Image (cartoon, rainbow, N blue to C red; front, side, top):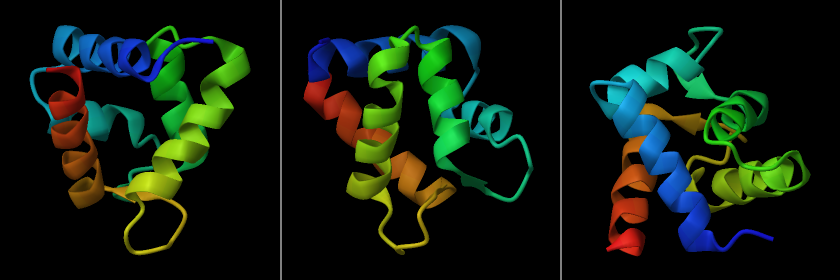
Length: 92
């Protein structure tokens, strides 16, 4: 199983290589345009990051449980920004 650091690095690569900003990445993966990332939308981001299918669901659930501060089961833009900032700290 990939380490936390390896997963975070893969996510960062997708966000920095393919998008001009975290906001652009968020908007791209927010397929229904509701201003939130559902677990399915997060799993698509993880697939883009080449996280194996076996652990995408686990990582998606972990991201939601760790960063969903308003308890709605999704990640809004504010929560996404916080997650990106914390991931950047974890990789340094």
